[in-house]
Length: 131
Image (cartoon, rainbow, N blue to C red; front, side, top):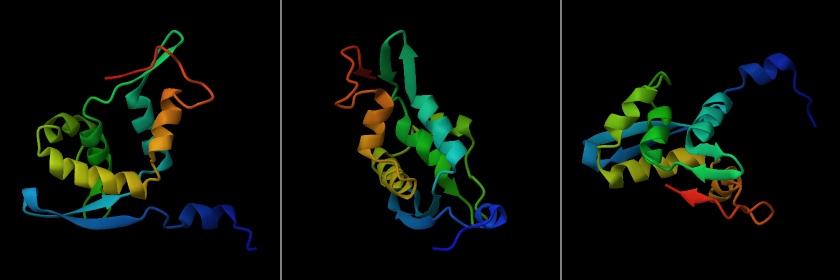
């Protein structure tokens, strides 16, 4: 087993990308995995804690993730967080296709979403609701 150095870890190119065709938009987009900080911000944006109850705010969730993960050829985001509202007005089928790729590349599973909500078998809350 090779032990990594600090520099090796920080210099590692560890954010995979995937180009996918989005017919509705007339071309392809490049989707990049979330960074750790982006994933934390995304998760924070969809979970609301009210007293003892946890609630997931799924409003515009696809557009939020698309805004965070669609990048140009240099790996820079094409959209700001504020653009999520505008993206939310685009084709649901197109958003869903890009969302699924972003979710897979970023390691966001259905189980992760349940864990975020506190709705796993261990910590189910009767007050849990989906928006």
